[in-house]
Image (cartoon, rainbow, N blue to C red; front, side, top):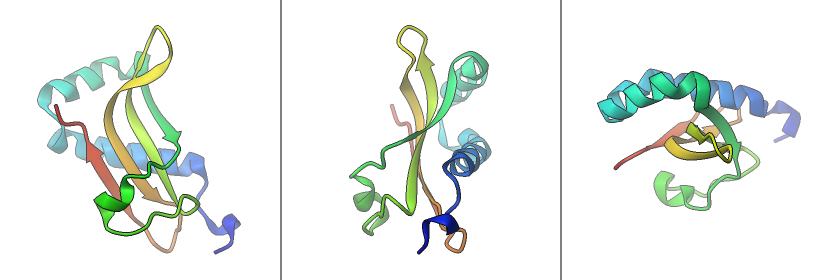
Length: 108
C-alpha cells in the first residue's frame, strides 16, 4: 500500500478520541469518567505513541506499525507534562479501506 493512501496521524488521533468519548461511559469506572471529564480541559491529552509490541497478543494478528497507529488517551501530570494516567490505549488502522479499532481500557 502506498503511504499517501493512509489516513494522517492527526486524523487517527481525532478518530481515536471520538471513539473514546463514545465508549468511555460504558467501559471506565464511574470515578474515572468523572475525573477525566473534570480534568480534561486542563490536563487531558490524546497522544500518538510508538505502537506497542504487545498488540499482536490482544488482536490476534501481526500489527504493521506503518498501517496501524497507537493512541493513548488520559491525563498529563502537570509537573512533568507526561501522560501518566492512561484511560485507554487504542490501536487504529490508518487504511481507509480497512476500518479497525481495538481498545484496551484502564482497569484498576
